[in-house]
Image 1 (cartoon, rainbow, N blue to C red):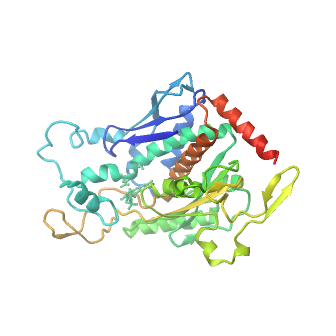
Image 2 (image 1 turned 120 degrees about the vertical axis):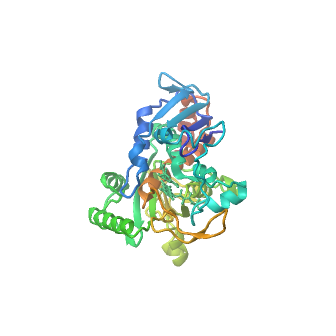
Length: 386
Ligand SMILES: Cc1cc2nc3c(=O)[nH]c(=O)nc-3n(C[C@H](O)[C@H](O)[C@H](O)COP(=O)(O)O)c2cc1C
Ligand SMILES: C=C(O[C@@H]1CC(C(=O)O)=C[C@@H](OP(=O)(O)O)[C@H]1O)C(=O)O
């Protein structure tokens, strides 16, 4: 079983992830992990913190001469900002006399529900872990999964399809071309005209002290038929992808293929007819299902979209109540992102990569990469022989 755990506070010394269950002999490059970490830090609309951090991974176990050993892989990402927080975030000792305790919960963040649940008087004890800072570890973990998947020609792309009221598309070209255009864009949008409109919108929104969310699309190509199962709800690939994406801070909706739009159409406009050809085997001419039927990958590209709510920290804050005094307040904000949907799309790619890699390892098992390749090839020939 492939699994991971992450730990780390937003302003603590570092973020950590341990991955267990990787086959041995998988070539891994820290440069490729660092590239994904860099991508997550991009995007017009981010706040001051991204000027402080330059996320880099350090691997301290599970890898020898660039190949996995089959033992747990430990990944570390340092928080550069920690040097400014050492006294306030000390793991031992007494709090400093001048410690500014956070008692003003922000609507839309984990502040109030987290403080009540964990009985914290200082909201910092909640927001440190609730913060999306730890999406850096999700991206590092996803970058490992991605390198495993690439060996089997499985590739993951993303781009933004909406920000606030602005919709992008319909777009011309293959997913590879669309993603390549999005990669060059400051807001991960494949249409340069819409990109400019979106940048203006983010600028305006920032001036107004407000914030924005967005919708991104993740596409996975090269997935073989047969990952996931209809057998039980928690084995369904669609359910697992929804869980992974919804597990990212601020994601409030996930759809696969036509998603919500499928409910508005008649059956003949939704379902993908089945064809057969000696060379291609079974195939489809449409992909309304987004590559998943009955909770199982059907061999077509997997298409998932996720909706991110606007950032809750507003420069023009919403009304709230002080946790201690119960008095109304309007907070002053030190710094915040205005729109982080482009970064969330990169996180979306990472958690998708992880979910696919996990299902892939379940199906093709193997303690070593060679064993996994054998299982994969033998399954593909059995499918081709049908
Ligand atoms: C990449 C990324 C960056 C974010 N940056 C901020 C931020 O700067 N300020 C903020 O208040 N929320 C930010 N958020 C959103 C909060 O983490 C999120 O709204 C909060 O965890 C509550 O959302 P939930 O109700 O889905 O848990 C960010 C989210 C992501 C995915
Ligand atoms: C640090 C990251 O995102 C942070 C996510 C976040 C939140 O509340 O979710 C709040 C901000 O942190 P800070 O309060 O330190 O400015 C963002 O910068 C990151 O993405 O690496």
